[in-house]
Image (cartoon, rainbow, N blue to C red):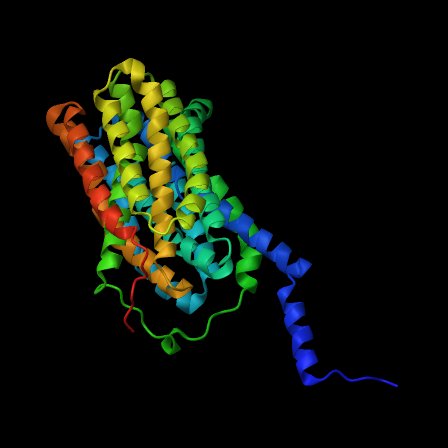
Length: 412
């Protein structure tokens, strides 16, 4: 005789089965997580590879100090200009396909830097910057969507991967340029990882489902929300410090008397320390009711040590470089974590990320540009220390507000 389950028993069985993660789901999560880390790795070599080779590039192309400042600023400016397009494109074509285009743009733009022309150097930097802008926006929303129970861990891992890419480029760009016989090779070789990850990501992205028509999705607006503006300003000000590091830390160290290889090693060591703090800070922040004190403290540490690299005795430079890595890595990680913690769901996270990085990176673009302008007008970097301290103070204020235990309140 056969027995039949009652409807309640059947529902209970289905619920128990659904609560147990299948091996396929686990493998899919591991694959997706690995891909996110590989994509993140490609979002920073554009900046740090140019930083350590900037004197050679400037000499070869006869760039003035102001033009060198514009060159380091252009990709950061593109981060702000192209970030607003990412959420809408993701709604229309799917996050996975947009991330594929991100890798293609980064690879193509980076490869263009192999051409010995000022025009192609700027054009390639802009193309890669556009791709990086969209990648920056979409990675936090993917974490919010696909890893809701592991937000702190995944945020730490992908920010760690970001810093790892920057550190690798800072350490290897000069030796690779020497091995390849030109600064162009030292810049363009970083297209290879982007194209390799694109090949790895293509099958998954093309198999992903296209989302429902974006016309059926309500628009989300955040410009009215004060908390969203505080998050955006905090992101922008910490980014201004970060891109002063990526764009000018090596030239500042060379101005202090270090040779190119040693300066590149110091930058790489500083960014590698960021890798560790990127992994540690998000879990700590997620356990705190308010992140205000942590935000302000990390902003203070990052700014003081970066200014110290300009003003302190040369013997203190190694220690200051490592401490700057601790502050800057933690500051970047907490800024990305705050975007996710202040968002009630993944779509709001994408919009808040887009707003934060649009406003934030447009604000951040002034950091490296002003450092370059100050260097061009004064012939040194002493004045930049006071600029850096001012940015740090503003980051402390906005970070205190952004760390409050609240959610942004979107309007549709």
